[in-house]
Length: 220
Image 1 (cartoon, one colour):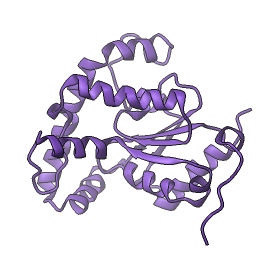
Image 2 (cartoon, one colour; image 1 turned 90 degrees about the vertical axis):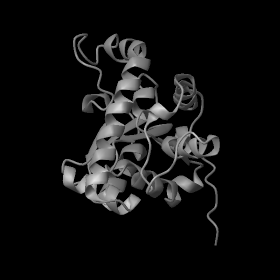
Image 3 (cartoon, rainbow, N blue to C red; image 1 turned 120 degrees about the horizontal axis):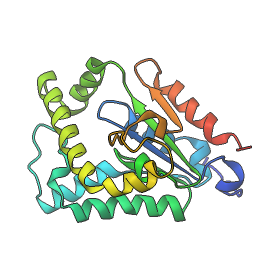
């Protein structure tokens, strides 16, 4: 029997209007997105999931921007700055003007800085070997290939986004007093997020329950 849509609005039932999930490869961010997308409570109340990384990969394949090799994911240097900016600001616009979005991407939590009603989740895995193993199993590559790809993607993405979003870091983070002016740009700084989950010590079900508990609580 199909689920009956809930007639209450997201604003009425949940503590947050939208959710972002950020995390580096192997942290479990995509797994959490899929769990939330398939959860009955969220499905019947109109929530939708969106992966920024998947969107970018589909675009890159369609445009022939890179040659996929052994399933490994590519970095942001394959895209022009303006395209990156359009996608990232598109996320921020959705979080500002709409509700019921679960957006997973490296920068979704940063793009949500200062946006009211957004639960910002940072996924991490404190054991690098576990992160590498997850990428090995996901992409069908060797541990060395996975490690090198993860390192290269991180450095290339960080360098590009640091250059692109230095002004936004100043406006959304520094000027709001979240960090000191001298602090380096760190899009995955833990104190910029509402919830930080270490998936090395927290399993999939526990992670899901943490998030569901957070969004069902009304703000006081």
